[in-house]
Length: 122
Image (tube, rainbow, N blue to C red; front, side, top):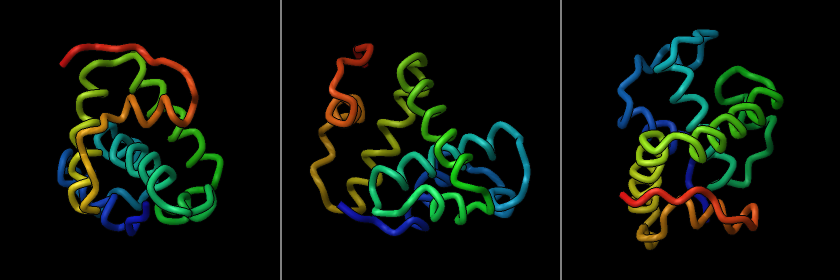
């Protein structure tokens, strides 16, 4: 399953509405950082890009891309609102890719990590 990284950035940005120009700066404002981190997460899961290539999209290094991915995983496991947001964004991405979007992110992560994550009923 492949999608262009700019489509991912646009979908995540559409959800959170940050000032787009700030995504590529050193800004650490919460709304900007959140969009970058979630975009990096989906770029890793839905593309064949390396960590370095993902970081390059945001003028960051590979370590920042890896850290962002881990932050999203942690927030997904511990924060029900964040998990809800990620699921909505994923469904939007899947629709744009014309895939079955009824499979929640939790199932996708179980496939990646082989473990049951915290289950919160919607």
